[in-house]
Image 1 (tube, rainbow, N blue to C red):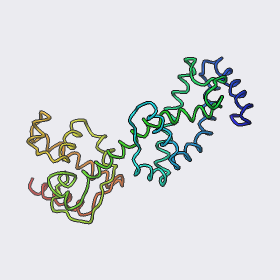
Image 2 (tube, one colour; image 1 turned 90 degrees about the horizontal axis):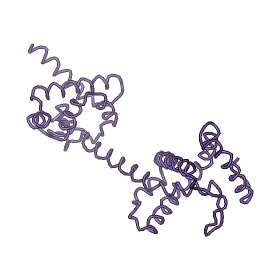
Image 3 (cartoon, rainbow, N blue to C red; image 1 turned 180 degrees about the vertical axis):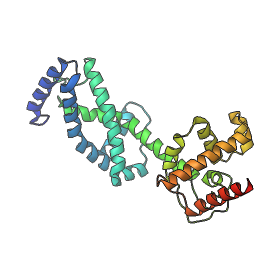
Image 4 (cartoon, one colour; image 1 turned 90 degrees about the vertical axis):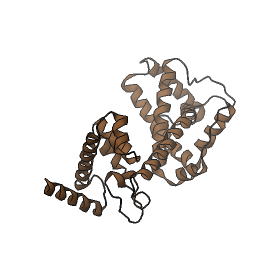
Length: 268
């Protein structure tokens, strides 16, 4: 158990670490200990993320060390309201903290029962939470960058009237006259794209960025015909994914795709 009175707990922690040291902090015994540590830390970290305590402590810690670190107020608000986002950061923080915790123990560093800090000796859990504060900065930056990345993807994969031009998904699906209320293309687009060959991925990414076929061909050292062929293959994969309910594509574009296929067969 990791609980108990403070003094008694430190004694328990010291005995547990000594026991685990005999196995080199490896094996089943250490895995069980790590699971217990994580289970006890999870509710505390969720509360600290919801209340903003984890972020404030990390900012203060960085300031004391002369490091530049800032948590945007919008992000603080989102973490207060969204359990999903709290859990995303928490998992990342726990992964980093447990990795560092184990590595430090194996090096003979980290938690010491006899450490006498400003507030005296601390328990293993208090020390571990301190590690979580330490690694929060990296976890937050990764999370924030991911949010920005998806925001940019949504902007590119938008089906609004403004996007109905040569760029974006509108251009990819030849929907230049498509006009509806703002809708966002499902983020499953990226998953489907990553299933394609690297050359096809490159063609599609340059297409949604608005590059003409001639420039795509020049950049990728392909012929314009090959560019069109790869883009056509991806459109086929997209419509197949839509039929399998893996992705949402507006009904009007399904109709256009069917009409184009019929016209092409008729021409042949």
